[in-house]
Length: 249
Image (cartoon, rainbow, N blue to C red; front, side):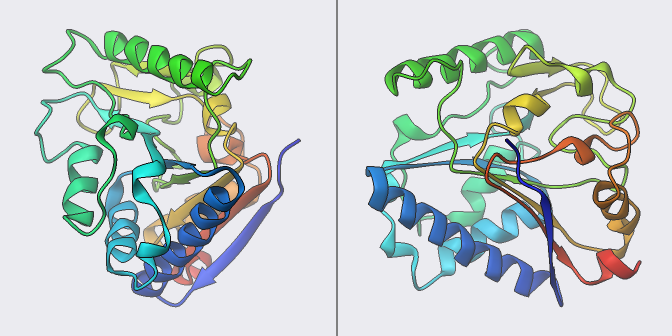
């Protein structure tokens, strides 16, 4: 079962980032109270990093035992490990020293320093997901995700699933290598839609009038070929956390 889409408007980017950070803390605290740990799937982009910065600055951040939080990424640019283009590098810079994670629970996607191709990096991430699922004694090929954060491109793409590419329709693999991204860099690693949709909660983070068309397409249920983001639904909750100009254009 998947959750219907709910739109939550905010007056500006700052309030969107701050509100989302508090929502993230609520989810993580509840998960740790329930089972002692939590699992997040992060996204890149300006809003993704803004939310992480707000988390780091929150007066509530110490309510969480961050050493018992697993961190995954929905996609990554297949470039050098220390490249500022990598979502994992941007995330580390956003939180700085304010949030200390257990390195064994930070699941970065492989870089061009580690693997010859994006497909090799994707295969390695699939193995890491499967290993985490085994540790949780799950029958699925992936662990439990409490929350996945996602951006939304003006073209309607999510993670590195772009309009017109066959990856959008993948139903079997959890993670794929991308060679021909229309947005540079061309090589990337991405979770598939079924993998993204396995999260209990999926929240879009969208800001700016240039995203109004994509937001309207997602809300209107546009075809996946045109708007991959329209195929995103969490199992328990799906939120469009947006700035008001995304709704008015």
